[in-house]
Amino acid sequence: MSEKVNRVEEFKSTLDDLNKERMTLTKSVKDAAIQRFKDLGGCETCHGRGWIVMWDTLDSMSGCYAEYGDCTNEECTPKTRSLTGFSTRNTKYDSNRGTQWYPSYTEEESNLKDRLSSEITRLQCEINTETQRWTPREGTIVETVRTGRGPKERRVPIGVRGLVKKSFSNNWGTQKLIVVDKHGQKWWPNQSYVKVIDPEPDISLWEKLDLEDREKNGFPIIGTVMKVSRTGKAALLRTTTSKEVWVPVSQVSELKTASPGQTLSILLPWWIAKDKGFVTGG
Image 1 (cartoon, rainbow, N blue to C red):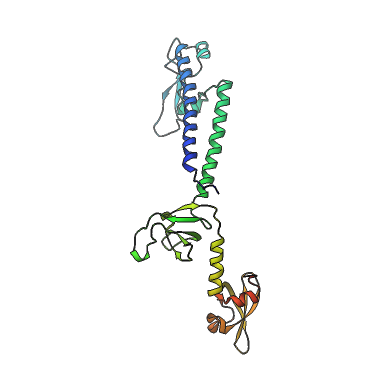
Image 2: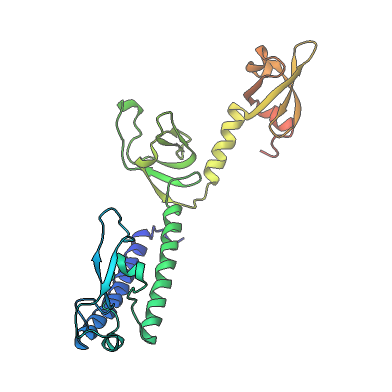
């Protein structure tokens, strides 16, 4: 079986190269336009717009109160401006006047730009997918790479590997994990203290551990006490799936003091869970 590799950094490196190539293309087109404007004697007073700003107020960031006048360069005429076009300088006033400069690409340059943009978009999606894939979550195998702070006896040692059974936030908003190692021992590391080493593992070992644990300690259910038998020796429970079962009070200590209407989280003995149809096989 081939080794599973986190390719996020590989994708990011390729993305950087593509962004640089697109920036180089954009700069090349802009530099060519600047040189063309200069070679054709473009007006440096109005930058090919035919108008200049006569007055503006600092009260508006958009320049919507500005007042304009004709270009003061006598050699700047509608005819010369039609030859040179706009300079590449865009300002907030161009947005107001509809005189923004836009790059003009050849067919070859346009095709290259479209290809680069498409590849960049695809890689960004790949990075998001790969990042999510290698983020600690339920069902992944993780390894602790930091111990954190707090009492030493409560720290999870570096190098502990196991299956993430649950991800949750504690009372302080810290994202925590419940991790079960291959021996069945549970650990509670911070999510930021672990790294994923297998995003899609074979969990048959942990399924076996779960079965052994349930056979030993019971099957967890949440149920509401509907009524108690006249003798007080059994209680009728309705589970969250609307399944109703009679459970011997002697087998579940929480039922000894329970009253109708009370909702409990309990562990059914394995033989009862099987007999009542909560599990099959095993």
